[in-house]
Image 1 (cartoon, rainbow, N blue to C red):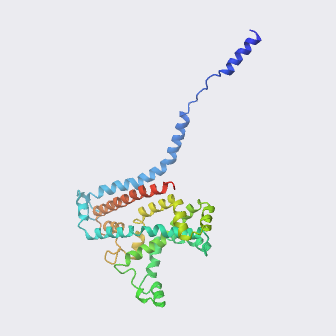
Image 2 (cartoon, one colour):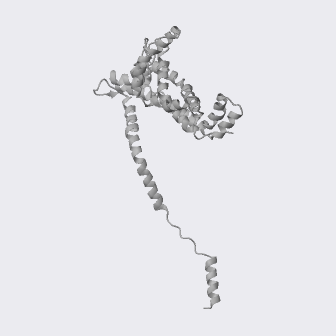
Image 3 (cartoon, rainbow, N blue to C red):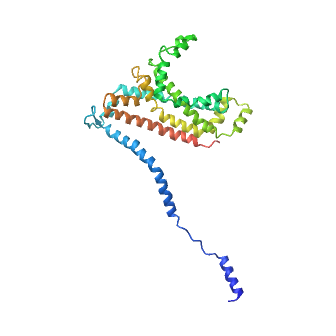
Length: 319
C-alpha cells in the first residue's frame, strides 16, 4: 500500500468518525430512584403511621356507637345527623367561623412588624431580639400566664383603672362577647413571632435598592408596604396565609384548656376542644370521632380554597 493510499484512508476515518457508543444509563437512574425512595421512606412511614392510619380509624369509629371503653356497635349515620340537632356543636362551628374571620389580622400584623424591623425603625434591635420569644413559650404556659393577666383584678384592668378608663376594665375571659376575642388575641400574641420570622426571610430576598428608590420617590411607609413589599412578597404572604387558614383552628386547644375551658357557656367552645370533651370526659368515642371528622372536612375545605387562591396569587408574576 502506498503512502498516499494510507493517508487517504486516514482522512476518510477522520472525516467519518465511528458512531458514539451509547452507554446504558438505566442502572444509574435506577440507583438514583432507589436512593430517593430510601430517603423518603422514613417520612412516608411516619405519615402513614401517625396521620393516615389514625384518620382511617377515626372515620371507622365515627360510624360506631360506644359508651365508655366497652364494646361498640354499628350506628351508621346517626352520629352525623345528631350533630345537626346539637346546639353545642353548632355553637362550636359558629365560633370557628368567627375565628376564621380574624385571619386578616394574623396575616397583616406580623407583616407590618417584620417590615419595621427590616427597615431598622427605632428600637428594631430590641424587637429583632424578642419578637420570637412568645413562640418559644409552651401554649399551656401562655394560657396560665394570661389567665392571671386578664383576670378581673389583674394587671390589665388595674392599668385601665389607673389611666381613667375604668369602663373598659371588664371581665375579659368571662364575657359572652369578649371571651372568644380575648382568646384569639392571646393566640395571636403567642404565634405571631413565627409569622414575623417567615416575613423577614421573604424580605431578605428584596433588593435594598428597590425600597430605597421608593423612599426617595416620597412613598410613605404604607405606600411602600402595599405597593412595593406586598407585590414582591406574594409567595411568602401566600404561604403564611395558607398556614394560618389551616392551623388557626387546631392551635387553640391548649389555650382554651388553660384559659376558659370552653366557657362562659359555649362562648369559647371550638370543635377541637369539643372533640376532647366528648371523647375523653363523656366517653362517647363514636360521637367525638364524628365531630373530629367534621372538623377535618371543615379545615380541609378551607385549606383547599386557601391553597388554590393564595398559591395562584403568590405565583402570579407582577406586571
